[in-house]
Amino acid sequence: MTRRLRWWLAGILVMAIHVPALARISPQSAYDAGMKAFNKGDYGRSVESFSTVIWYCIDEKLKTGVPMEPEDFAMGSTAYVYRGVSYLKRGQAGKAETDFAQAEKWGGQSARIRLMIGEAYFRVGRYDDSIKALLPLVDADPNLGMAQNYLARSYYMKRDYASSWKHAKEAQKLGIPVTALIGKLKKAAPEHE
Image (cartoon, rainbow, N blue to C red; front, side):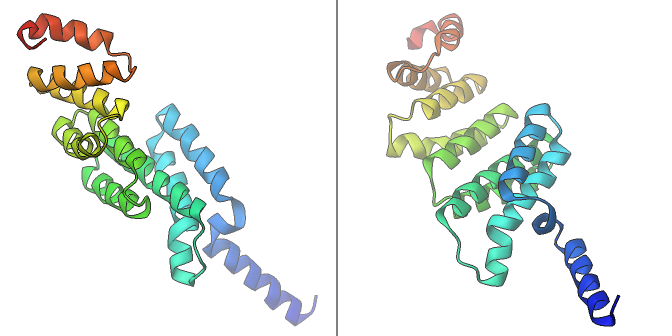
């Protein structure tokens, strides 16, 4: 083997070691692996996989000046949300909030991203944060049934039954199944019906 060929192969090896995500996995494969880990409750692996997606779709393109495509914004912002939820599940709220802010930045203030963030906060019992994320959505568009649903549930958990009733009725009008919640509200606060 010639000296030049050895240097070329050594360069390839160094690049493969320093850029493992580029060398071994596509962003879609990393996203799929992240979702699989997330759905299994393996939040450590989920964080790793979504970090690869974020690196590929956003960080590396910003660093190298490669133009970002619309799918980079969509996949990158969604990866930030799921990595943030994974951090929440691991008890790392500060990292989660940083990721949620990045998701909103790269997602262009999309209603879908805000809804995912509000739902994530609800699922980990952070009802004030859920309300804070979702109220602007329903103020801007009261026809967002799932936002109404999670607002109703968050208010119920805070024992603000009047607000819970209001959002539960809106969610029900929009076709969201809230029968169980309404049953609980009828027992807890029938006067607000």
